[in-house]
Length: 182
Image 1: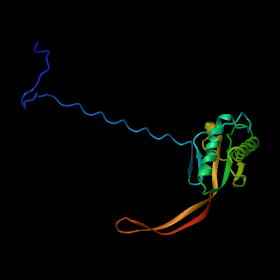
Image 2 (image 1 turned 120 degrees about the vertical axis):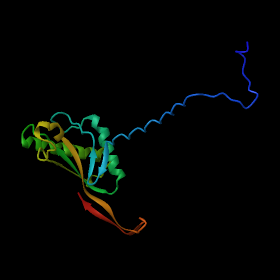
Image 3 (image 1 turned 90 degrees about the horizontal axis):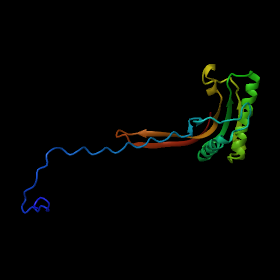
């Protein structure tokens, strides 16, 4: 019976526990931020997905509408962007003239989408097709050469002149906003 009853300690004696406590579990590493689909870098708006078109056509596929809406949102969130060139590029498949024409029509279709559906002022947009004249990769990897790019051709940049003292503190001496081309 005594083995089943609760033990009550009547003095300061304790029971020794042998061994070591387990290491506390490390907190899980934070999830890395997902890569942005659309971002401004220097004089480009970089898209990390392709704008999809119907085969041999300038008709933008519906699955690219969200991507282009995101491009429009990024343009609106960056008022320093004043002018933007929508570039169309093609692979080496087909004739040079056909690729130049198709890439130009695709660039103009993207420009029209940004103006009509994205709410971007038409005056800040231009479009040009480059066909296969500016490849990213060699002809064996043509799929990557089919693309739409966004080059910022005019933006307002803030130039700041600072002075740093011996303690590493910065003091702004001069700040100017200037227009810069892409």
